[in-house]
Length: 204
Image 1 (cartoon, rainbow, N blue to C red):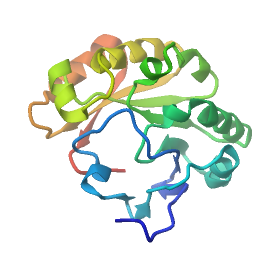
Image 2 (cartoon, helix red, strand yellow):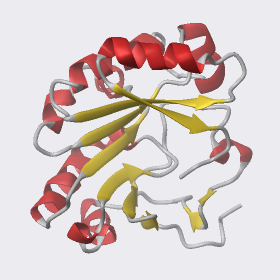
Image 3 (spheres, rainbow, N blue to C red):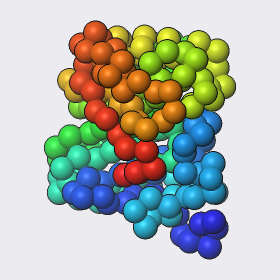
């Protein structure tokens, strides 16, 4: 749908500067706009044919110190390009970024085959980790993971990440059929991290 629109590498929502890292993902979430052929968020076209390199992402951050935070996001999973985003994170911090966040599905350790969370230390201030299911069955229905054991892997990622990242927040979308938002919040509380409810069909 956005084929005729120049894709945004950097885009602004409120005073947060988002970096569009990749369209690739480890999940095929049924509620994701791109699987309904919508590649636009708040007027920004995010469908990319080529992924931006490190220099392009640094340039897209602009005046890093001017934003409340720089966020690695887009309509894909940023940690699939872990080396690149950590290079960009180091650069924007040097340039004065107040806060650097990654929006993630929490499957980086599973995908990369090792605990990558120590690499976040000193570079990443916050993680927003999607957990759209209070148990594996509900999670699998909504998120349609490509890897077995994904739900448990998200919880394990959070346990490791909280040691290295000051602000870890689990998010879940209220309104998904069968999703128990209170149960998801209780999981976050048990893990010792923050929780944020998101609203179905509200992106950005």
